[in-house]
Each structure stands twice: as structure tokens, then as C-alpha cells.
Amino acid sequence: MSRLPVMSQKRVLVSSSSSSENMQDFAPLQKRIRHDAEPAKPQAAATVIMGARPTASSKPAVSKPIARSRAATVASGPSRGVVKPPVKAAAAKVASTAKAPTGAKVGAGSRRPPWDLKGKVCDMEEKVQNYQTKYKSVNQENEVLKESMAQNQLRTSEMKKELERLRNTNSEYENQLEILSGVEEELARVSADKDRLEQQLNDLKARYKSLETLNCNNETELQTMKVTISAQESTVAQLRQALGESREEVHSLKETVSQQKDELYAGEMERRKLHNTIQELKGNIRVFCRVRPLRDGGLSKHISLAADDKTSICLAKTEESHTGKGTDTQRNYTFSFDRVFGPQASQQEVFEEISLLVQSALDGYNVCCFAYGPTGSGKTYTMEGEEYDETRGVIPRAVQQIFKASDKLACQGWEFTFTASFVEIYNDTLRDLLYKGKADKRPEHEIRKSNNNELTVTNLTYQKVSCEDQVLGLIALANNNRATAQTSQNDRSSRSHSVFRLDIDGVNVGRDAKCKSSLCLVDLAGSERLLKSQSQGERFKEMTAINGSLSNLGIVIAALANKESFVPYRNSKLTYLLQNCLGGNSKTLMFVNIAPESDSFGETLNSLRFASKVNDCVIGTASANRK
Image 1 (cartoon, rainbow, N blue to C red):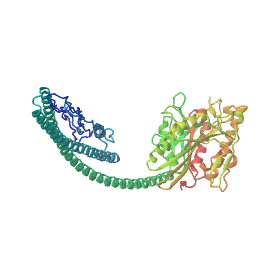
Image 2: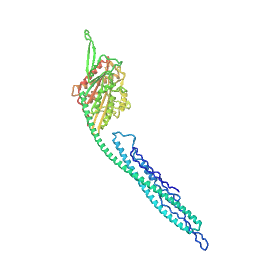
Image 3: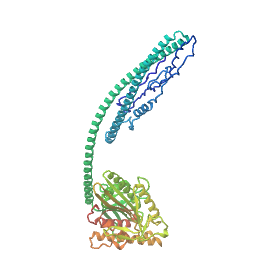
Image 4: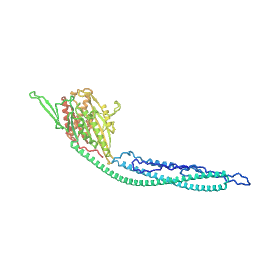
């Protein structure tokens, strides 16, 4: 007696309480139906006529197919049916849908930080979408099971009909057996048919029991799915409620952030106002003095600095008696500036004093810083320094501070655009230090003043920069192009004035605010005397141009100090180019560098006297260039 295959596995829907939300799906086995041809009916018994036995008439065997079913059919039945395609594809599709959720949460093993509210909201939305997908999958599976159960019931009804038909056939066979009891062969055939029909009947009974078991399992699974769906609906409702609360919290946090941004912007404006007030109290034009250390590392005898006073410097000189009768006398020259740096002062210490002034450039004020002094006093070292971080000068440190401060202001909505240029004044002629073409094809440059009193240089290279490294590259290019030469006082003396300019354009779209300013960092050529430098030929011509421009600079400073109505800016290219920094809307800082050697006493005294004039100069109050 053959046994029908029974569904050995069933789909189990697991609640998605874990973070992985995996589901184990067990698709029902494919039900196969084996159909056998119905055996031929026994031939009718032969009728004896006149003592002779006529040939028995026979009818062809009729096969009647059994109705299709999703359950398996024993192959030994008398009839053969048509196999119906299983529902494996639909079940597999549902299983794959349940196993692979639509959105896999990245980094399920780690928790999101508390501030990542947007990420949490996205995770909740993904969970809700997964539960909706699972809900649809369960409904599809339920429909498949209902369809299977209906087909099983139809198959059972057909089997009952088939069983009744077989019983009727069996009855007919029994009647024929009584009629043809005398025919042993016919009787044996009928007996064989009877045994076969009984076997088929037993198979049908076993199949019926199998279908009943399958139907029971389907109903159990259906109930389980209903419970799971109910639990999922409850979870979805809770998630929706949590999502609504999260949205309200996000909205509240957005309002808080907006309020804090307003407060931060107001604080930044107040900082700029107070910062400018402090700078104005210190003076819009300030003078710093820096003493270069001796080359052999010793101490200078004619220069003295007070240990408790960082604003004064004293020069002492022994003078002989003119009559020859009196003793030699010592004469002291004392000067006071905003700050005096001794030979041991580091580059970082020097820059810290002007860092607040550099910040003003980013706040919208024009700022100018230039170094003045005799040849070999350390002006280029102060402004540019060396390539190591500890020895970097004012220009690279100022550029670094500008870009760091602009990055911090970016979070407040400010966007800055920087444009760099580098020009030198050699023999009272302008030269572009960023020019990369052939030397014999250099264009001519002129200083022009626009209607809003802004100075521009024609045919000058203006380079857009966005980081500190780009500016350092331009500085290196300018140093290679700058005019230098060897003199009796310095192996590599700067024979020109170099002016580095960084134009700053800032805009805050959200606040509808704009600012525009420029940062000028100037390294002046060293002043020198003919008797000491012993310049000849081209060097003499360069020395004459340098001393002439510095003399005109002194004249302009004197005119500003005396508050004269006319200031001769146009007397030289240097004063004309720096007129907005000296007497315009600007904050100005001057470094006076001096050499500590005793034979440089005259140049040192003249430089300190010139710096004192600048320190006594008072220019107008600077205002920010804002719109």
C-alpha cells in the first residue's frame, strides 16, 4: 500500500523584534499527481446459442481522468489525470520577499550617536517600510493557502465521486460474475479487477487522509499568520507614534538651532565691534621695533633694553670733547614705541602682537604691515622668514591665520573669496613678481585710482587662491623673481620694495551681509649710505632709487603728522601705492628693524628717528567696508 507524501515543512513568520529582522520561510512541498489509465472493463459474457459458444464481444477500455489536485496521487489508480503546475514559484517569491527586506540598515551592529536624529528617523522609516512589506507577503501567502485548500476540497469531492463510480462498477462486476460464474477465465479477470479496484480504493482513502492532514496544517499555519500580522500591526502603530514624536522633537531642535545661529551671528558682530574698538584704542597706526641679534651671538654694547619695559629702547654713544680739554661724554638716545622686541624674540612672539590686527582684515578693515630699516637689519626675515615652522615670518603666518579664521566663519554662513598679487618697486618702476613669461616681454604697469578711491595696477597678475599652500607657492615664485644683489653690507640684499596683497571678499547670503578688505604686507628695501655701502654702477643707481623712495616716504609721514592739507603721495611709486594704507581707511603697522653692530649706529639712529615720526602720526578712524 503506497503512502502519499505529506507536507513536511511549513512557513513560519518570525516577529521582527531583532535588529537584523531576518525571517525563516519554509515553502510547502510541491504536490505531485500521478495518474494511471483506468483498466478496461471486463468483456461481456458470451451467449451460448444452439450448443455452440460464440465469440465474446468486447468493448474498448475507457479511461476517465481524475480531477487535478495539488496533493500527490498514487500511481496505481485506474485512471490518469493531468498534472497541474505547482505554486512553487509564487511561494518562492513570497519567501524571497520575506527574507530580503527592502532597506538594509547600514551598521546595524552599532548605535547611532544621540545627535544623529535624522539618521534615527531614517532607521524608523526603514523599519516601517519593512513591516509593510512583510504584511503584504503574509497576505499573499494566505491567498495561496486559501486557493490550495479550495483545490484540495474540490479534489476530495471528485475522489468521492470516483469512489462511488468505482463502487457502482464493482456492483456491475459482481452481477456479471454471477451471470458468468461458469466461465473461469472471466471470473479470474473479474477477480483481478476487483482486487485492483480495492487497492485503488485503499489508495484513495489514504490520499483523502493525507489531504485532511494537509488541510489541518494549512489552517494552523493560517492562524499563526493571523497572530503574527496582528502583532506586526501593533508594532507598526507604535512605530508610527514614535515617528510622530521624533518629528516633533526634530522640529523643536531645528528651531533651537536657528535661534542659536541668530545668537552666534549677533555675538560675532559684537566681537567685531569690540575688537575694532580695542584696535582703535591701540592706535590705527602703530610702530614696533625689532633688534636683530649679533652674528657671533654676543651682546650689543650701545643698545640697551629695559627688562621691565617692552616699549622703549636706548642708544648710547661716547662723544669726544671738541676742545680737547674736557673728558669724553656719553650721550643717550631714548625712543618709545608700541612694542620693542629684543634679539631673543621668536617669530611666533612677534606675530602674536599683530595677529589681532590680521583678524581685522577678515572683519572688513584694510590692514597694512611693512618692515623698514637699513640693509642687513632683518626685514625680510621678519616678513617672510624661513621654510621651517618655527622660523616662518609674518606673511605666511598671517595667511595661515586668515584661512583658519575663514573656515571657522563658514559654519555661520560666511563665504570668502581670496585674490593674491605680488608686486615690487625696482628703480621706481613696477614689476609683477608673479609673471611667468619671458623677461624681455614684461608688460608695463601703472597705478590707477578708481572712483571709489581703490588703487589697482594695470597688467598685474591677480591669482585666485583657496588654501594656504597656494599662497606659499606664490611667495616662493615671487622670491625667485625679486631683484637682489650682493653688497658690502649684505650678501643678498633686497634691491626693491615688495608688496604682497591679499584681497578678501566675504558674503553671508543668509544674513544679506557683505564685506570687502585687503591685507598688504610690505618688505621695504634697506636704506644705506654711500660711504658705507661703496655702491658703484648699477648698485649705485639702485641705492639712489631706494633712498629716494624712502625719503619720500618720510616726507609723506611728516605731512600726515603735521596734518597738512596736501600730502605728496605721487612723489614716488612707493608712497602712491601705499597711500590708502598710510593716510586712508586702513589700520597700519610698521616694523623698524635695526642692526646691533656698533658700526651701524648712524643707520640705526636715523631709522629710529624716522620710526618715531611715524609713531607720532595720527590718521583717521578706520571703518569696515561692509554692505
